[in-house]
Image (cartoon, rainbow, N blue to C red; front, side):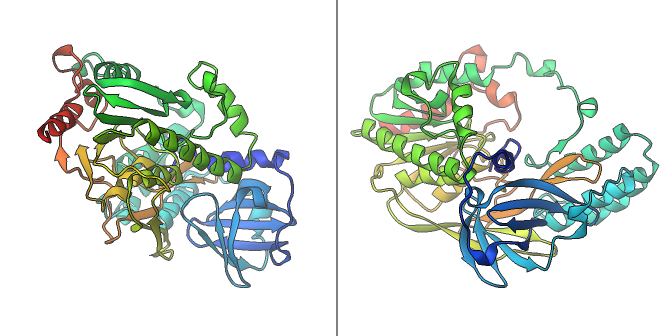
Length: 468
């Protein structure tokens, strides 16, 4: 669940430059074409390579290409069904096509606003999973905006219409990637909000005020140590990616870290990169749990975590659960229906933390970080404190209009094991701390009267004191 443009495809495109060695694949898959269930995509396999396409009623645009075994793992293969895993917890199901659709071979470009609006509307109609949760009548949207599109005279006018529609959905995973000339300038912070305390300053103040003996890994993606009482462990997770152990320890928190990490990561096949993320998370959690032995409880702080890979999130969670549990299910929108539901069972790591856990959540806890929280729901020793999470769980599904503009949407439905959906509402907390929902109000809430104060960590310390 990445909050940046889908790294899945960026890395796959890099593979076409020869970063992965060709490996043999099953003969039954060579020179075959497949239609993906849901997602509106077509996969063509030729020899050891693949080409992946976004398809709609007008165009078929290349999305990614590369070495097949560097991108996918074959879960099962039969004459009428192919199941692949791209590196996450969701498997992709495919049915065979006789040949690649002709519009995938010859480029079709249509610059007319009505035709592009039609593709935009149809793509959401077939793939967007949360009209009900977002209280949107999608047919009414078409009726309202189609006449406006027919009267649009410029790209700017057409872009404004699409942005207005997207704004109604209030979904943080919906983006419209426009040419630079059409992009809005960042809005200045309103004077009513006063001075803005940046995330960097806030985290620095948090650690200096409440932390003790904190250590850091990979530029701060994982930080751990103790709260100031010396008895409660504190783990700050600021992202759910960048856990791979690529950079020497003495450079992990240097200015050069980002460039060093990216250079190595970009040299990997996607499957190897995903494996490295999991291995890095496991290595670090073994170290974290060793360092926090003897603590009476531990805090896991996800209030500043905007997401990343759900596989990393669930791997991290596995170090804090005592037993196997079916923690979530996922399915994707597919026309008027859905793909088959896939259940996910969380298995504890070999060595786990067995004492009480405080899980700190807030409105900026999003995407893969929310999947961590979703997976934790049925473990009673994990107490959720803060405010409900952002409510955006789905992978970001990127699509392209006939005119070349790219956009994204949420097509996957994550539920708890009882089938409850938290899209839009977010994961609730056990102890409510009433955080403001909007930036910069959330950040500024840590500075009542201009002095840093973390009411949630104060609550944790209060609860721990009551145990005595």
